[in-house]
Amino acid sequence: MAIIHRTTMDPGKLELLAAWLPERPWYTASGRPPELLRAGGFRLDDPQGEVGIEFMVVTDASGGRPISYHVPVTYRGAPLEGAGAGLIGTSEHGVLGRRWVYDGAHDPVCVDRLLALFQGRAQAQHQSLSEVPEPAVSTRYDGPEIADFPLSQVPEVAEDAGGTRVLLPGGARLGLTRVLRENADPAGVVAEWTAPDGVAHRGTFASLDLTGG
Image (cartoon, rainbow, N blue to C red; front, top):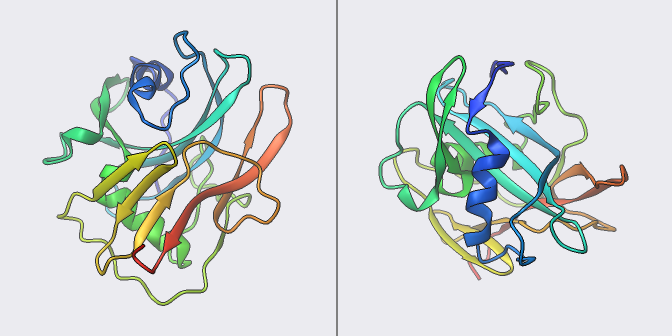
């Protein structure tokens, strides 16, 4: 399992995301710089122990209405060749040194582990504690077996105001919800986040479309 180091990152995660988010097609600009608050999330383990995988929720309080965004991120000790479009930035980690931080949609390890989570072959982990499962994360998937994502292949990604789609082998698509909303009957990968007023919400973070549409 991944070891969570209690140390510093410079620049910090929220600083990196505050510079990166306004360029995303699914981000709602307020006319002011983002004011980001941590709002929840979880982690997945890389079986090889090389890549950190975190599914972050950050809430932007810069506008009249707080908006919560889902940003899967990966942390690597070296650049991921061919994934420049997914680079969020670099940061100096107090223990591990320089880390290259990527949007997880562009990282094959993140995509592979998320597919494993869908099928019960991976377990969500607590966002900030080592070797502690996160029971608040659940999945609903009744489809056929999905092959492991090729770790040598940088995913093909499409984005628009509605979110992010990752093209999988065979034409299926992995959908990443970016603007989180409470769901009455959530399906897919479901997790929780907390609004600035302290109210907990639950909704879909990721979904699978096997039709290729």
